Amino acid sequence: MQDDQINRRGFLRSSAVTALFAGPATAAASPLGHSLAAVGRAGRPLRTPAPMNASTEVKLIILDPAHFHAALVQEQMLKGIAKRVAIYAPLDSELLAHMARIEHFNSRPVNPTSWELDVHCSPHSLREMLAARPGNVVVLSGHNGGKIEKINASLDAGMNVLADKPWIIRSQDLHALESALEIADRKGLVAYDMMTERYEITTVMQRELVNDPAVFGSIAPASDTEPAVLMESVHHIMKSVAGVPNLRPLFFFDIEDQGEGLSDVGTHLVDLVQWILFPDQAIKYRDDIKILDAKRWATPITPAQFRQVTGAAGFPAFLAPYVHGDQFDYYCNNQVDYTLRGARVRLNVLWKYESAAGVDFYHAVFRGTNARIEIRQTEKEKYQPELYVVPNGPERHAAVLKGLQDHIERLQGAYPGVGCEASGDELHVSIPDRYRVGHEAHFAQVLAQFLKYLKSPQSMPAWERPNMVAKYYVTTAGVQRGHSA
Image (cartoon, one colour):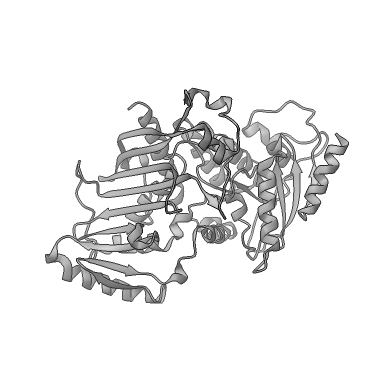
């Protein structure tokens, strides 16, 4: 054991971190939840984080970083965040991958970071973190199945939470999500999820135009054949970096842990529907949302493909219920139809094995009485998201063009250089490359917004919390409905 720990310390020192290894737990693990916040080391009083104010330094705690999004929170060093960050996690490949990413940020030649890491390795990471409470913000990303219990325990212990989607993947956990938000309200804490897609420039522009009656009109009437909102997200299981497959952890394929497509990456789509159609308005899911239909289906994966994307020699035992012969049926695809305040919405969330173009795809259509506002990402667009305004017939073209030109003019103060151009019967919104910052940069933007709310929790819009509940109602109820289809 001693030699093993020396080897671990050697690795961690080579990664420029300070390692504080927890010894074997002597007490039996307690169930997650409120009682866990009271668990401490024998004889040691619990530390309660001091209330935050405008001058309080933000001290991050990274808990169980099993997804690379946890590292992206530290991709940049923002003012007000302490450079020393605590990490609590089991000593496994997920932790080592996270530390390697931070080391990459620290050693890159352009704009390097200077993070210092206190790494606490323990199979009881949550228990150890709650006992020590070395910071005031807990960051969570990965292992979705038990994430809401960790969120609740962190909030109950007096720490703010910044957590990656999804917070829950099962309908029965909706009450736990509501409980987390109630705890945050009661204690004056900030509980925030990483809705990065709100910062994608084509989506920002789409929101602007959908809410301009001169361009969009009003939302198109409900139709059984043509929804008012259609979104499709296509991700790919096998991805390569410099020609080498980017290996995925085995838990990625466990839908009891990762969730199905709708309950995971589909969270962004549901969020955008609400955020675009009804900006700054609270959604009451019991009154405003009705699930109409849903379905699920599998992407088949062969043993050779599974080995290529995981490095594993075979399918693990926990996937046995989904293995038939020499094929693993990965239930990662979902479609859900629902209405939001009468507007009919269809979402398709798909995972295919591999992309010939090497990119994921996103398509979003909002149909109005004057025009449809559409994001496309096809070969014609060179696989880059582009925004189009398509008037509903030649008789509306001139009026829609005038409305679009007027709106673009008003945007010059916030987004100078955005323009529009005719492309046949369509109008293309041209967006300068400087606004296309990419997916990874959006995490810094989310973090910057989160920091503003930390300094002034009352500044968080009142609609954020009910809309979070509404969002997860759609994702979890949609998956549940698909199981009964």
